[in-house]
Amino acid sequence: MLRYLHALTLFSSISVSFAASADQWQSRSIYQLLTDRFAVRNNAGAPCNTSDQKMCGGSWIGITEHLDYIQNMGFDAIWISPVVENIDDKTPYGEPYHGYWTKNISSLNPHFGKPDDLKTLSSAVHNRSMYLMVDVVVNHFASVPSHPGANISSLNDFDLTNLSPFSSSSDFHPFCWIEDYSNQTRAEQCWLGDKNLALVDINTEDPKVVTTMNTWISSLVKDYNIDGIRIDAAKHIRKDFWPDFVKAAGVFSIGEIYDKNVSFVKDYTEVMDSVLDFPSFFALSAAFSSTNGSFSDLLEVSTASQQSYKRGVSGTGSFLENHDLPRFQSQTGDLALIKNAMTWPFVTDAIPILYYGQEQGYQGAKDPDNREALWLSGYVTENKTLVSLVKSLNAARKSAISLNSSFLTTPMTFISQENNQAIAISKPPLLALLTNVGQSGTASWNVPGVFDANQALVDVLTCNQYVVPSDANMTVSSSDGSPKVFMPATVADQVCEHEEKNIARKRRYGNKALLTIKAEWETFGITLLFMLSGWFF
Ligand SMILES: *[C@@H]1O[C@H](CO)[C@@H](O)[C@H](O)[C@H]1NC(C)=O
Ligand SMILES: *[C@@H]1O[C@H](CO)[C@@H](O)[C@H](O)[C@H]1NC(C)=O
Ligand SMILES: *[C@@H]1O[C@H](CO)[C@@H](O)[C@H](O)[C@H]1NC(C)=O
Ligand SMILES: *[C@@H]1O[C@H](CO)[C@@H](O)[C@H](O)[C@H]1NC(C)=O
Ligand SMILES: *[C@@H]1O[C@H](CO)[C@@H](O)[C@H](O)[C@H]1NC(C)=O
Ligand SMILES: *[C@@H]1O[C@H](CO)[C@@H](O)[C@H](O)[C@H]1NC(C)=O
Ligand SMILES: *[C@@H]1O[C@H](CO)[C@@H](O)[C@H](O)[C@H]1NC(C)=O
Ligand SMILES: *[C@@H]1O[C@H](CO)[C@@H](O)[C@H](O)[C@H]1NC(C)=O
Ligand SMILES: *[C@@H]1O[C@H](CO)[C@@H](O)[C@H](O)[C@H]1NC(C)=O
Ligand SMILES: *[C@@H]1O[C@H](CO)[C@@H](O)[C@H](O)[C@H]1NC(C)=O
View 1 (tube, rainbow, N blue to C red):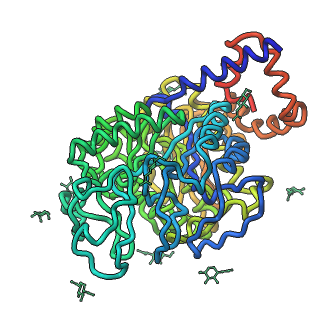
View 2 (spheres, protein in one colour):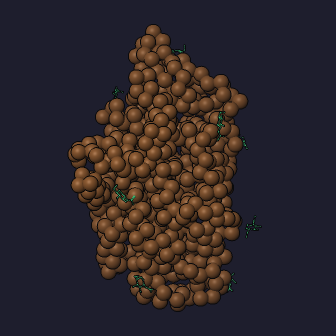
């Protein structure tokens, strides 16, 4: 019993020191979820009509209860919806189930749970040595104008008294719609939204406002033991606002710079830890959403990002979907294209981010259809092609990271292919071969000199063996348009056995028994070692 208590103390001290840096996040793999749509408490079968744009009942407790689902796919971080209180008004765009319509940054969103529920989620995440990323909105509050639908002429068209802590007109920018997004002054100082629901633009030029925001983020991160923040609409605030804000947060920051232009996005990599790599996203999505997508665009954008961003693509967020974009599977049902596109984020220099539901084959197109309730899938993982794919990709990346201490710091290289529907990405010990010929096409790659002559490899997506020819010039083909991810057989064996091992371990111990085993471990060292190696649960 004493030992058990000892273990508990150590656990809480580990949690306290979790607040994570950019370097620590780089090895992570993030599962992005919408709190209202991921899981309801006690797994109750709540209905959820996506087109209705209403609250469906997901909560922090729901997430806490379903962390196994996320962790079993190999993710070691979650990104949850904004946590602060939102407006209650009826709007033509429904209810703020997504959490982005801030009303009071000093209060938590009661629809998602109580403060203690968020603390419980945070410690449950940390118990699994996972990280918690919280979405934060700094650019604006939301407000329904006093006369919805009527033209807005000034701040007087809004009742600011229920907003907090900013509620006087000097706390906000004077009214104007952005209209011209290419005018950066307007993008920063005018308003998003429309005459039915305005996103009242906070005056982030005002030193009082700046101090309040910095104090707020610092407390939020400390109070809930947050490991990283995702910054909404970051391009709508002046760049020199960010360094002090992210310093006050004290944890990893990754900004949403919704833009195709690498030269535009790159400036933000200088003022915060990282950005979501939108330029690469646009090119990625276009490259794989049909069999005539352009790989040269993807390679060009990706290379430009590597060369322009402060730390290259390393530590940026690579993604194929998010809550603002049509799901990839609304654009194509070709399983080969889907698998290739999904592989990309896991085999580049970036931090992979998967938007919940992609693994279940969700096909919602644009907002609000892309925000389906996950519980409607039953969280089934058995015989799910895309769940297995994600598991293998996470396992391969983890294995590469632990095998090669330079994996995270050495930029990927593209090995040029004669076939313009083939891409080869080398990031030793991983070699990813991608194609957009689709499921009825045949692709082939030539990869000379990456692996040694006669070296035994395994394609970790199929667990098929491959031996490198004696001239070290690999010729690989795929008759069903599937991607391939090769690793040396010595390491890949672990990835390919991963799934079987997991099942066997669960059978042996079950979850309760694990607590007892934990109690018997003598030292902090062993506990920490097991936590870090991700074997624990
Ligand atoms: C879902 O909501 C939409 C919009 O309110 C409505 O048109 C549709 O009939 C609803 N579907 C179901 C199955 O209730
Ligand atoms: C975290 O782990 C500790 C020690 O095993 C346990 O007492 C605590 O209940 C766990 N917390 C959560 C939220 O799972
Ligand atoms: C609102 O503004 C538009 C464009 O300036 C104008 O065409 C329209 O008549 C105005 N509507 C009202 C109700 O004032
Ligand atoms: C905002 O939340 C804080 C903390 O709960 C509360 O004290 C304050 O009254 C709220 N402000 C408004 C305008 O409701
Ligand atoms: C950008 O917008 C500002 C504010 O509306 C305006 O003063 C400025 O002239 C605009 N710049 C250009 C190049 O249009
Ligand atoms: C891309 O961004 C840079 C820097 O802001 C700008 O100079 C350039 O005009 C932009 N290019 C396009 C095509 O918008
Ligand atoms: C690419 O293919 C899609 C359908 O697969 C088609 O709709 C589109 O027009 C094609 N684009 C070009 C440029 O050929
Ligand atoms: C999964 O597939 C296997 C082999 O095809 C089959 O035996 C098993 O019943 C399937 N399980 C589920 C839950 O569909
Ligand atoms: C580790 O990565 C470096 C840089 O890419 C590479 O040179 C080296 O061969 C890799 N080692 C292994 C074992 O993959
Ligand atoms: C590798 O093999 C391909 C196909 O046989 C050939 O075209 C290419 O020149 C070879 N590359 C090297 C470096 O030997």
